[in-house]
Length: 250
Image (cartoon, rainbow, N blue to C red; front, side, top):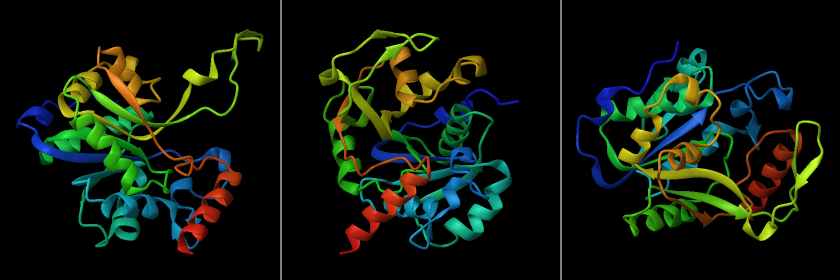
């Protein structure tokens, strides 16, 4: 049974200006039909999760990292993925049965280590994030005290349809107002704590951290990211990610 937010997460004043990132890397990637969780699949010879952590660890805008993996993978991640490679990784912890429970476990771990002014959540399956995107999002949040959070996102290039349970189109929203949310999503620590201090029944269906913050009254703004910051979900995404990585080497 997942437990609610750990009260020890709020025992100290957040460290001004600093950013902690929770890497959400649980799940099993069933859509990839691989013989291992997708976060450990190699991209040009390096496990995807290792590439994700490396991108965050090398970014000056990031101060601390907690990695959340399936509970049975904690020892493997310590030994094979993190090891002694990353100075900013302060903990590897086990996740819960739903994504939000895993994020909460990571947040609790960060709180026990020491709160920071900002906390972000990044998908372990987004290995192509670049430091300039993280920096831009963090600076936007720091510059506006009335904001609770910032979400990296890209404008939708497709026309989207809203349908009912039977697939009947009931609305075609204006594309100009639609953005595809990415990660990291970065928030003020205390607003994030309030958003996650809710019962399991509320958190169970949450797939987007920003929606929780918005639902508790927080103002969140989008900051344009990059289409390259894709989430690896199916085999075509692996091919695309490797092509981007190869192009970056040139």
